[in-house]
Structures are given as structure tokens and as C-alpha cells.
Length: 237
Image 1 (spheres, rainbow, N blue to C red):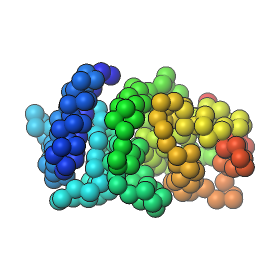
Image 2: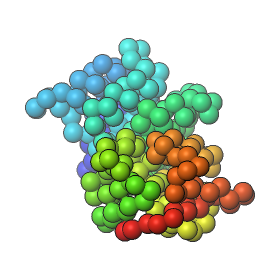
Image 3: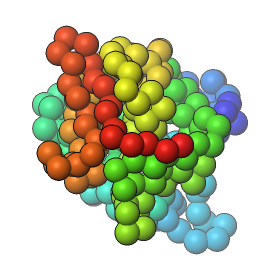
């Protein structure tokens, strides 16, 4: 997706300019802003004023709106473009908060430009998506073409793009032991450098959103020193 439209939301003028220049050199179409309020207006506006971004690079610390709130609002308004958050914070709670808000990936400042570009490529590849698949498990229905998950009552389950990709991977390989490295390669991409603990955070988030309990007929079983295995009593594809 070399012609993809990317919106950079970064209040540091020098960083914003460097990001825009390098992304344009990679062949992307780039818009940028220092304001969360302006970003909201451009992404959620109507008609010709609305920007159809394929990916958003979002700094958490903005002068007018914090990135967490903006990210959550975009997801609440059903904007599906991948969101790569930039942050100077490294605490696990901050990362979890961002993922809960709907971020697809994180990059900690100061970052290496080559790594950022690799993550952009990985997120855009995932946006293109694999062939359509459907899965039914534990009363849930996942449709990769529609990018949706519904519970037994037909109510939508609000998963982020990364959470949905992770769940589809587990279902595709139900009963198999998946290492954290393999999960990272297949969900985030082999060129992306990210802490393996991120997988644990996403699995915990999936269990929460799928309302998992010991009574559920599926289990994300932890394999110590290896990764995870999804076990489902009955699964139909």
C-alpha cells in the first residue's frame, strides 16, 4: 500500500516534519497536524472535509487532547484505520491503557526511523487482510471479511484490529502450541521489534472482552516458556 494515506498527529514540529518527509519518500501520501482537535475534525468530519486515512500515527502527549482519549473516541465512532501510538512512557500500565483505548501498536520515543517505517508497513499489510474466514466458538462468531465478532445473542464484541487478528490466528491454529515469537511474527510482522510481553497483554485483553471464565468452553492455555494454545471444546469453521 505504497499510496496509502497516513495522518501524523505530533505536536513536536521537528519530529512531525521528519516523519512526514520520510513517509513521503517511502511513497505514502501524508497529512500532518499538531492538534488533537484538528485531527478529530479531519478524521470524523463529513463530505469533502473528511480525511480517509489508511493509518494514523498518534502522539499520546498532545497540547489539547490526550492521545488515549482521542484514540478511544475514534474507535467509538467506528474508525477502523490502524493507530500507531508514539509515547515517551514505558510503563506496562500505559501500554495496556493504550491498547484498551484501541491502539494497534506502540513505539517508544526516542525511536529508530527504520523501525517506525517497518511498523507502518506491517500495519498496512494487516489492513489489506488475509482471505475471508469465519469461525464459531464458545457461542461467538468471527468473520474476518467483515472484521467483526458477535456473541451468542448477536451483539458485537468491540475488539481492536490487533485483538481480532490475534483471535483469528488462535482460531486458525486451534489446539496448536504457538510461541510468542511466532505470534509476534504473524500478527505484528517479522520486521517489527516489540516486547514479547505484549502478547500476554493482548491475550489478557481478549479474555476480558470475550468474558472468559472457568465455565467457558474455550481456554487460552499458557505454556510456560513457550507461549499459548487455544483449546475449544467444539469449533466450526
